[in-house]
Length: 502
Image (cartoon, rainbow, N blue to C red; front, side):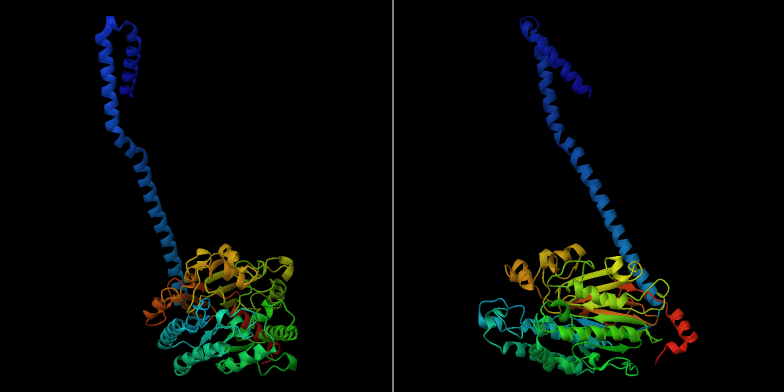
């Protein structure tokens, strides 16, 4: 600052000296010389000034960002440690694997060459690798969540691209997928549950496409054992479960309910009577569960999720129609109340696929309080959407193995049709159907003796390095305790055993 003052003073003197330069020439020249030397000094000092002005703040920002990142990582590690600690205090009942959307034929479905479109060897390789790792880890059972083939069975319009005139493609894709399942899981005596997907039935299924699916897959939905509700005679004959379409099974007190989600996606009236029967059957199952004293948890398995971002999100290609969504949620949760929440069993976990990406919702089952008699703040559920085992898709630029946020999900899933979604995100760049063992994967779900559970997504590369399912390998998993109190429920049944029809 002193240097600046001296410079300004001398510069002013220099200006005032100019009219009298003939008299004060020597002083004026000295002042101007000082000014030139000062400019040179400032020029030499410029790098240091820039360093002080920009480099130090940038350095501070870097330090703060590193500290913040470490804090977030620490919190994640704390959550993982809490999850592992909570699980360590419980006894594991069993674990199973969810494998979604093998969809043989999808990677080359949009090729212009017939021979390329008929090549689904990449899907076969990834699917086989995944199932071989599953066999090595020996789960209780495996759920394959639909879309075993890509070829739409009704083959309407141009839905099957260049293969539209080759109707044998669909059965070939299903047969190749079934062969791998037989040579891995079935040969290892690991039970398999197969869910119907939209590519197995068509987006608007009819009687013929239902029969096609049953011919291909019904025999693979094998009983795992446990109570099959045969003792309950109150259900009408018309509403009995239909094996391969909608049915249930139980494993060590955990009830699994399989629904054909295509009935709640399609807005045509082709199968309204079949949808009505499935809905009435679902209601009867929820009622039957309340008569049991030994249920630990309830899980719903569907191909298409009811929703993935928010319960009231708009209907699109990757969720259910709002009317049907609310109907099923009302059946599942409307009888829960603040007085019976510790003893009323409802589905706490929905496991789904279809999206070819990962997403997860945890919160109220419905958006509007009046939809479920004001119990929205009591009933909470988890909807988990798991990636494809062969063909993850990079919708809207989200990495194929990263979970979608609710907003990202809604941007893609509520697009009116799958054709529109593909036209917008996939067709312009088919490399967005990424595949590859570093992104494609599966989900392990483990249940404990009190009904709590944890789940974690593994890529095929990650699961290849896993030797067993334990606290170490499940670090970072999502852990959920059941919303009810099993001990309170048992006391209630002990006090009034007549409630239990079993």
